[in-house]
Image (cartoon, rainbow, N blue to C red; front, side, top):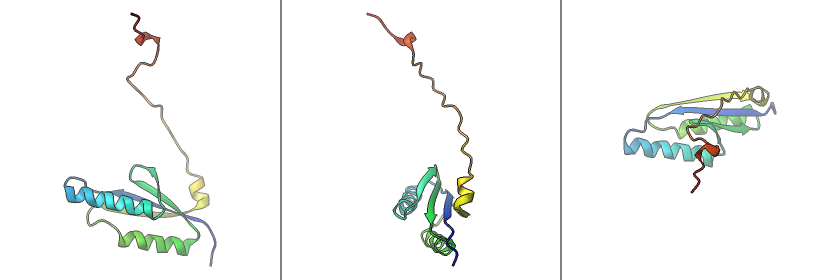
Length: 106
């Protein structure tokens, strides 16, 4: 058995038009959180797994709990590959002026 740490990444795009679809979305998201996944970004969740066999079992568990509609994709990568992920973050723009220009003297 190979003891290489693996990451399981779940991507999903679920419809949320009707109340039933919203409920399924919330249930799936709560399932992921209860199962130890953390949110990487909106609709992308990740979990560390001890080895490839455990990652495959985790993927089977996700398949059993998938919503009836929408797309759920699962990607398994090694921890080394995951660590090579590059974060590219843009500047945050805001319309609020945070300076002395807004100061009102009475």
